[in-house]
Length: 482
Image 1: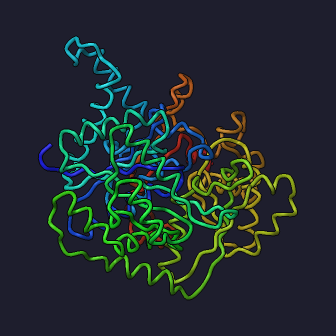
Image 2: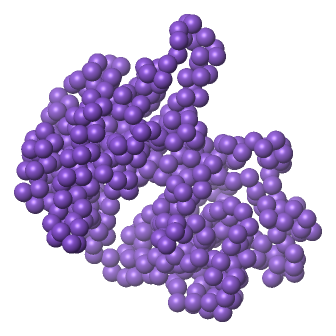
Image 3: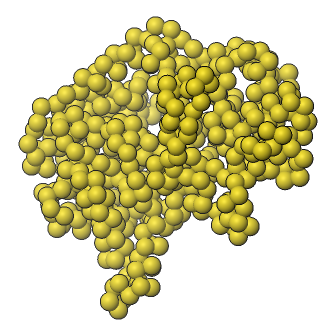
């Protein structure tokens, strides 16, 4: 294990408070101090990976270069820390149990009685150490999904306890907790955070640092209460109010000297910090000159009465960064494609947008509405960008309405179409026949050759690029040539 350092990031009170952004920001400020960092995400569900989950259940499935289907926070880590991660940096309860059972079947435990404790937590530790060694990192961030009070997280908390017991100077624990401000009460409440800390205390863990997430900035009184009742020094209670840009979290953390505190606790040298790239980006974001309005036409928006933008988080970040590059603020609207199927006249609403994007997806629900949107954009010269399924539907629309192939379709939706301009990849047919769905798509980074004079080449300014894939169907070149 050598002298590598480990920072565990846990969530308190409720999910969705920003553990992933907090972990990524900690990584960014430590990298700005000159340290080699990497990150690991632990998800407590029994799924082996994120690939079989509905985006409205879990959010975006983020694909790594090596094809691993992971949680969206892996994207945050790559963006904030400017690193490329692999399947070694991601684990789930299902993946851990699968590995332990496989090892038991291979007699790798030497005939011992294999138990949930200690063998599952020890497998978690082995995976963390392996990922850290492979990345040659000095500091490894490990985010534990969900919240500390969830039963399914007990084994991961036990892994933290065991690792810290063996290496107390090399392990740091951070809790990202939420401080609500109930409208009726009119004041910020610390009691939920106190209960969350007592929960991890019961698992044998004392947080070293508490990141206090809140809608508003935390006052001194609240900081004192958290310090007193959670046994954390005041300077280790970090103020983390809502920020206009997620990248401001990085500089907000440094305003409270977070990296200096972390390095001191881990007994590491406090190297000089260089946050210039982040200061420049934040200044640029705050001073954008123009504005563009982009519509995302999709179907993974609804979760009850609410909109789940996490289903397309990488697309959103890409649009925002494209805006930064061009000195414009991007205003993004969510457009449910099924609206155009129920009320065709609504398609005229697309005229108010500077550009339309149709992202990836699967299945037949809502695709005729997407095709209507694509046709409207083509006929009215509205800039359009199709990603994955959005590009495939663009091919279908063109084949139907320009080439006269009236029943052109994808065999994903219509197996009997006479014009399958989008068809299943030959190697994928057996996977579907055998019901072999998990991690069997074309996944990960693949090279593509771009022809000079095309829009794609003009965008990349390269003849060869690498993009990450996640699909079973593709354009049927022979059909289009005929």
